[in-house]
Image (cartoon, one colour):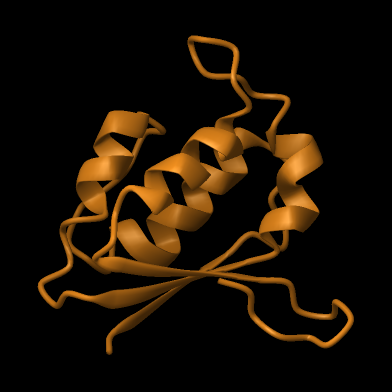
Length: 108
């Protein structure tokens, strides 16, 4: 199964999350540059040629407090909406990994 890695270790803002997803996922699947539009993000999740695939997102919880200061148009925390988009895309096996956490195991 093809695997993509998005590392949010240094993400302290929504712009940092966008940059990390561009580097670890959007560019490798041929999507150019994602600008943070959540409808487009949903579309990008269908771009990989091989389905299913694994998308490993490191340090999701560690950046949540800072990143969720950014809200969507309906005032929802942005990572909450991305998590919802992940759940709606069965072709992507999402692994939310927290390196250094007790047990140091990826979480699905």
